[in-house]
Image 1: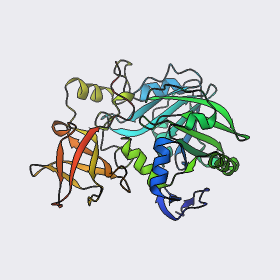
Image 2 (image 1 turned 90 degrees about the vertical axis):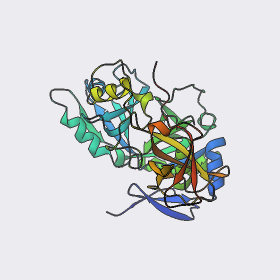
Image 3 (image 1 turned 45 degrees about the vertical axis):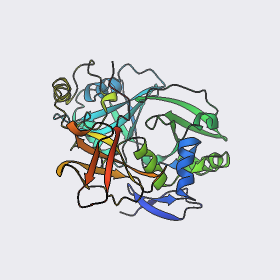
Image 4 (image 1 turned 60 degrees about the vertical axis):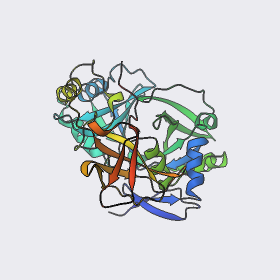
Length: 355
């Protein structure tokens, strides 16, 4: 299958394949892009993300009965992060669910639109629900950083990490659907527009000070802020509790597919491993898939490594046995006498457990 090119490649110096798209790896300078995203504001072409439109009176009710978080109470303009799981409690996908009144927007992981649609169709019997993939009809930009609200001219919010909001905004004469979804603790807005309007929106945002963010900077930000991605950290090998998604699990809402397994893992403290944020020396020779050792015994695996160091250290994510996940624990890297890793924190991208 031919790669789709990002529409926004002006100034890019090299490219990388991500999710079937050819994306700029770096626009100008990695350090400048990373700094913009974490201290000011940057913009990234996230059109590779999946966007589904769910219509029908039973949309939220069915999603509530099929996923980990409570979503049937959402009013128009409100949203939440929830997880579709198998009957064994394994991750099908992590969804952003936003109620837009006459329909529901589902934000999926890249390339997971059909899998999510098939999973929902499998359990739709008499319910009034129609799923439409609108990914190819729209473009989506990610506006990331502390100054996102100021750039969009919106009021500041204190949104919990597992919550989403949606509103229609005018940005430089372009109408966009602005979905607020924090990137860990970092402010982020998804801006969804018609394909034909994307270039003008990009030009306006960069003209107003948003720094173009290549794939390398976005990977580094995601990893540094402890946000897992489908493939390396999310998927059917893992359950939501292992992946740090407990902030998007409502243990009081009742039954859903996989609920019994997940509740039992939590109640009896049977989670075997956890996703953790890792820190390496800046010159460490580390790759995804490297085995992590404690006293010569395998206790985990690296799943993601930032493309370049920031703040004097190289950051990563990995799964480590539950007994060895305390912050400050140092682990060795198999096959490397010089490389070691320190556990920084448990990754909890959508917040701590609910009360």
